[in-house]
Image (tube, rainbow, N blue to C red; front, side):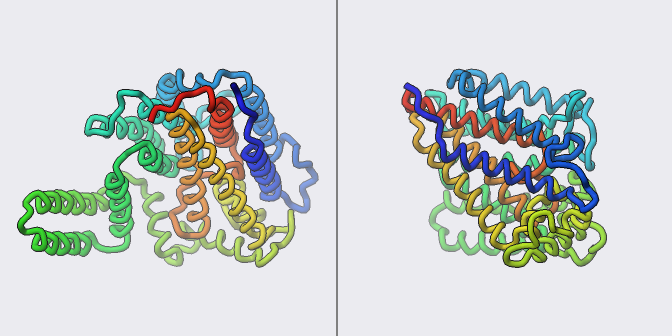
Length: 416
C-alpha cells in the first residue's frame, strides 16, 4: 500500500530550486539588461528549462515502479562508467576540465550521473542478504567507489571526485566498523597536516607517539605489531602527499591549494577568487544590499558567480539574515532526508537515503568552505542554487527517487 509523497521534503526542495533560480538571474543582472528572468538567452532562462525537465521527472517518478532503482542499480552504474570513459575521448573541455559531452541541444556532465549511480550500486551491494563486512567486501566496495573517482580525476575534475569518499558515512550506517571510519578520518587529517608542515616533522611526531605506545604495551606483541603497521602506513601516506602535489595534481590545482593557506601571496592570481568572495559576502552586512542591487558579484569581481560562487550573490544581496535563513533551510532539508531514510523498512532504501545525504552534505560543506576561504577553490556546485542543468537534474533525481521509495516503504521488507 503506497503512502502520500512527503510534502515537507518536496516543499523545501521546490523552495531551494526557486531561490537558486532567482539568484542565478541576480548574478548576471545589470542596469542595462532589459531581459526577463525567463529569457532563454540568459542563464536564468536556460535554468528554467531545466527546472521544467525536473517537473517532468517528478511526474514520471509517480508512475515508475518503486523497485526499478533496485533492479537497475548495476546497469545504471555500468552506463555511468561508460559515460565517464567516453568523456576522456570525446569530451568537451570547460574551465580546464574535460568533463562534458555535447548532446547537440545541451551539454551533459556524466560525473554527476556517476554519483547517483554509485550511490544506488553501493546500496544494492550492501543490501544483498549474503553481504558481510570482511576483507573481500571492503575491496569490492573500494573498487566500486574508486573506479568513477579515478576516471573523474583523469578528466581534471578534482572537486567532483572529492564527493565519493563521503560515502564512507553511508557504509558506516550499513554496518561498517567504526574504527574503519576513524582510520579514514585520521588519514584525511594527516593529508591536511602534510600541507601545513614538513613531512619530516610529521613523521617524527608519528614515530615518537608509536615509540611511546610500544613502551606502554611492551608485553602485548599484537598491539605493538598493530602500532608498527599504523605508523608505517601513516608515514608512507604523509610522504606520498608531496608526490600527489607535484606529480598527480595539475599546477593550477596545486596553486589553488597553496592559495588557501596564503591567499595574500598571489592576490591577483589564485588568491583573487577567495579574496573577492569574502569581500562580496562581507559587503552584504546584516540585511544585504537588496535583490538585484549587488555590485561585487555581478560586475565580474567574483569569478563564476552563477555557479561555484553563487553563495556570494546570496550574501551580498541578502546579508547575514539571508545566508542564515538559507543555512537553516538547507540544514532542515538534510535532516528531513535523514528522517526519511531512517523510517525505511528496506535496507536498500535506507542506505540509498543515507547515500543521498552524503552527496548533498559533501557538496554543501565543500562549496561553502571554498567560498569562505576554508577550502581550496576546486569548482563544485551548491545544490539547487548553482547554475547547471546536469547537476540540477541529477540532484532532483536523487531526491525524487528517495521520495518514491518512501511512498512504498510499507510494501518493502527490512533485511538488516
